[in-house]
Image: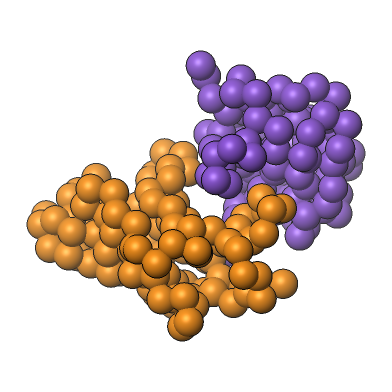
Length: 114
Length: 113
């Protein structure tokens, strides 16, 4: 069974600064996908970024980028130029093989301070 | 294109009551699933379906039933609600051509007294 671990229950950052959220996972799958989802106070689950395991290049979406270390099974999220609207719970998630099941970490609550 | 919709947004039940949480998607996605979110637990998979007429259990299926008679709809049934089922429930869908990105509904908050 896959597991996803987010070791930082809460983090805070000043507006305009950079913050990195950590995520590690454990799997025996060779083909899998990794995701970061954002959940603001509205509760809506919003996809932030996605990484395919077979791609060596780290995914980037505007101010959001990942550091994917496949051998270490690490998948961290870097948020640059943090904005107040980035305040949310962030979940790391894993999907392995072709079963489409998502395994989530417990989340990191990020607060961006003005 | 409404995406994934869920009804109701909030519901209060008494222990032992039954109810159905509705989920619908208009994207012709083959795969649909239900998750529950509890404080400090992340989201956990309850049931999922890979197409009409096909369902299977996830990580926490006890106390819940599902069926999939159409591609669009995937209702979740609580036959006899228990306080332990107090949670926020999310429905999600995806298609095999979407590299496994799942789209979530807005969630249903359920309180069982």
